Every structure is written in structure tokens, then in C-alpha cells.
Length: 345
Image (tube, rainbow, N blue to C red; front, side):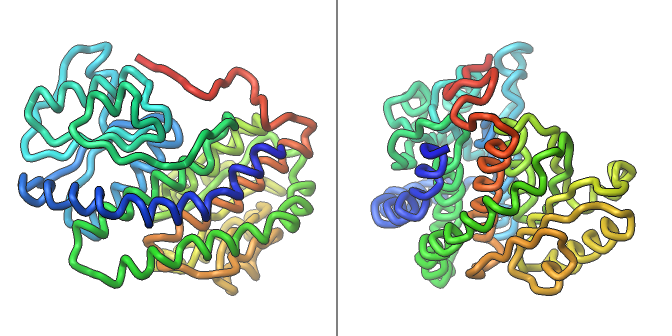
């Protein structure tokens, strides 16, 4: 647990390093994207990196007008049938940069003449060598099996690229405030340790977000699953109403990842529905109205703009997953059946 908490605690400094050291490379990449008149983005990723790609789908679509597709790597490695690309930026996102299927997407895109970029923590990895451009995560060694600091580093690199592609200088100012907001969020650690005890007996739960924090629901659910072996199922609040809401009964746990923003009204309505059905609400938010509905309220101490909120909202969920594992008598340093680098084909 000590190692996991240490790496969670490193996230503000990792963010400061990226903002200080990678802005120039990212602005240069943005200039090349404009020069090539890119009209769409394809992202190849797995695991936590795939959740970062989901964030990019909202980010590039709304801020930059670029449609984003998530690659299906098995098309390349198993079916040997690849889509034809045109005016496409192809990004491989991988902490280790070692998975052959992600590299295969980049190899094919480069053969088709597309601009390829690796976002990885290992700038000497296979993914980095295969790509035309590399943006390193500068996170240092991540020894915990559960990705924490590399996940938020991926989100930040994608946010920096979106900002460099845009024409709103104020977004750089918002990015500069992010490390201190994450630092403030880390002060919740002791409170979350106490709150986790309430949930030690759960074996299933739903994790719900929407918009930018749809990605957060997937990443929070992944952390809970891999560290506590709880069947944590992620949904958007809209999708949850299309059938899955049937699982809600007395005491069924639901985590809402819901900072203030455009979707907050929708998330309040979801919270009210869960309470009406007898569900147990754990809410991560900075919205007082929503927090008032919670059985367990995790109040984000600093608000950031909605497009940046996945980088603060995920931190309490990372901490919660670690302490929940501890409450269940599990070792978050050694989740069963998992290893740090997973290579899929």
C-alpha cells in the first residue's frame, strides 16, 4: 500500500514536470498536425490508456472539432484487415510501449503515410521506435501494478496537445493550476481511508460518470476491480438508464464521479433515482447539492474547469481502491493474475 500511495502522491510533481518540459515538443507536434491538415484522430490503447483515449474522444471532439476513433487492434493482429486512412493523426497510448497490438496499429498507419505519435513512459520502447513522434510521460518508474501517475500523465499530455491545437491561451493558464488542485485533492487521503471501511463487504458496484468523466468512471472501476476483485461496472448515466439500472436495490453501491459542469443536473437526477431505489451512494464531487444526496461524500477541495476535472476526480477513486483492498485483507501491491507490463496480440 505504501508504494501505491507514494505513486499517487507523485502526481502533482509529474504534472509540473510535463508542463515545464514537454510544452515545446507538444506545440511543435501541433504545428505539424496543422501542416498536414489532419481531419481526424485514431487512438490505439489498452487498459488505463484506453480510458485516457476515451477522454481524448471528448476533448479533441469538443475543443478542436476533431472526431476521434478508438482502434480495434485485433483487426491488425488477428484478422489482418486494416482500415484505409486519410488525413489521420494516429496516436499510440501505452505506459510501457511494449504491447505488440498497439505497435501494429502504428506500423500500419505509418506505412499508409499518416502522422504517428507515441505517448508513453518509455521513450525507448517498441511503440516509441515505431512512431514518427514521441511524447514521453516523464513519470519515472511506476512500480505499482495499478497505473496511477502514468494515467493522469497521459490525460495531461492529451490536454496539452488539445490546448496547443487550439487558439485559447487561457487554457494554458488553467492547465498551470492543475498540479496544485491535485495536491489539494491528496489531502482527502485520511478521510477516504476511514470511508473505505464502510464498503469492505461489497462484491459488486456501479461506477457512473458522463461527458469528460465518462473516462473517469471506467478508470475508477478498473482500479476497484484490479485491486479489490469487486465486480465494478462503469457506465454513463445515460446508458445506465437503458437497462443496467435494474440492478439497483437496497444497499447496492453506486459511485458517482461527478464534478461540476454541464452534466451536473443529469448526475443529480441519477443520484435521486439511486436513492429512491434504495441504493448506496458514494459521490466524488465539488457540487454541494449532489454531495448532500450521498451516503458517503468525497468533497473535492478545489474546482477546476470541467475539461480538466478527470485529472482531479480520479485521484480519490485511486486512493479509495487502495484502501478498500486493504480493508478486504488484500495486498494492493500484488493483485492476483496481473503484472506490470501486459503484452497482447
